[in-house]
Length: 209
Image 1 (spheres, rainbow, N blue to C red):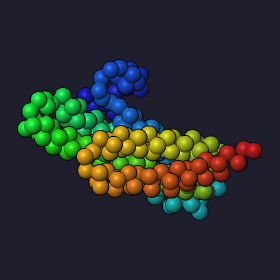
Image 2: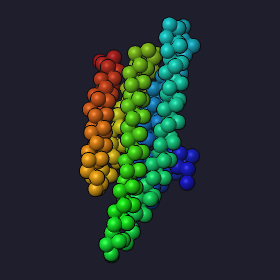
Image 3: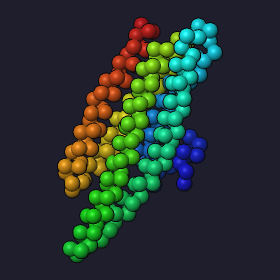
Image 4: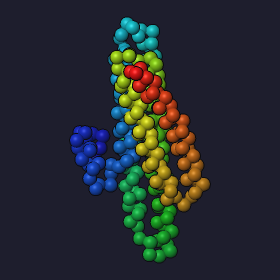
């Protein structure tokens, strides 16, 4: 099933069901895409305005990057569901004999790595989206600046949500050195970009106080 092709109502209904996919990773990617779209909308409303003629080229470049990030997040939403299914099957493998146990451990480790890679990429994409919101806030039209705040808040939430999908998988890994390396990468992104998202959000909110 192509989850990103469903209506909003259909997607939420499947998400709320007991179906194994979509899950938190895919939802995080879609929230990130929505957040990026809000920043992108501010760019759209800025293009063509005489008041912002001096930043037109910058805004068009930002919008092109935003378009690309939105598509990346859609693809990652679909990919998250794709990689979870092998892990779901791996949990059900028999482990009655030493051979079965060894095989299950090997399959699990491979599936866990793949299930970490997608939310890590979602995190990286959300970081880029947050950075773009900083620029949209600085250069975009003031009449829609609240949407930059809304967008960056969504991207921060998506970043945090994706990180949990990293950590739940690294916790089960046998290769602790690999797991800790992944955790370090995820925590580094959280530290830097949650802070940046808060800065952008607070700067937008301050304009209404």
